[in-house]
Length: 367
Image (cartoon, rainbow, N blue to C red; front, top):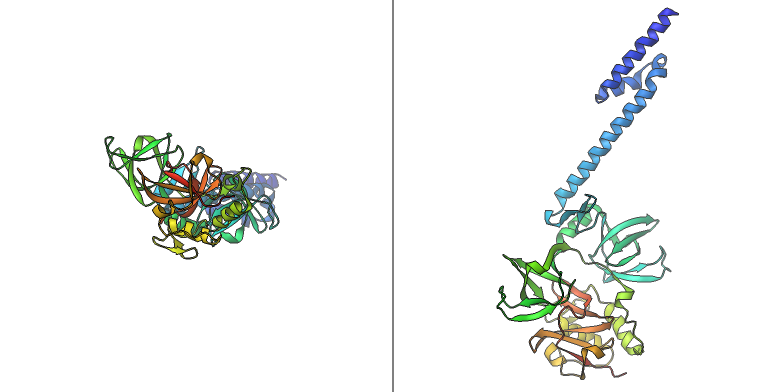
């Protein structure tokens, strides 16, 4: 009996010593090979050692994953959220849409689910959860379900982010002045609404050179927040007029125009499939409804009837430019929004109708 007790004590002491050196892989293997006579004392330690090792491996994988992201993604796109999590263009769990034109965002994970928003090709989103063939996302103000068939993640998403992220300046004050030169004495080209995004051409000392529908201007860096962003979704509420009295023709024209959101901008282009410029876009949209327009924004401003911007209804045209010189045209879709072929960088997009002051508005549909 004494020999048996001594043998058990010996085994126990051995296993305790084994726990003190738990980080050595050989000990884990030894615990697994221990004979049955030692199992009563060592099996628990063996499980603990395995658990400890798994934790270490898990942490190692996590570090490798973060390191991998940093290796694959342009560092300018990386930042950290309030919790210290690494983000890409503001997304912790990045997904990027790949679709021809735009994709419906639905209230429920079903093809019969109510459409609550739209998201265009190469737009970014936060992946929230998965359910079968559907993925719940959040992008812009839209939160809902999309088919996973049109969503890419991981390495492929990182590469797309590198390619399609836009360097933008967000106005942090209302009526931000865009000047012709980098000087407070320079001529004011236009004024920008708070929250509006402008494409950055170059960052200078105290000034940011921006692009506005093909034109260049300068804003003070004091009144803009600079970041890299992917395009995001829009909700139906954001693109729906919500105004009574709009005719079926007007709403049909707006819905037709919105089908091309995400399409290419091509200077001088008039083909909705291969690319259009701003006046080429409006020309082709109105042509479908039997209204002929010239291929020049300045000339389109002389068609139809001039109206006050405050009187605008969905389907009216808004014109922009410098001073009284018109250089850009868009279709008003209601609720303070326009759809237009904005620039080669952005393509056809939905945006704030008052991102800059409209020079005038024109009505072509009388009812």
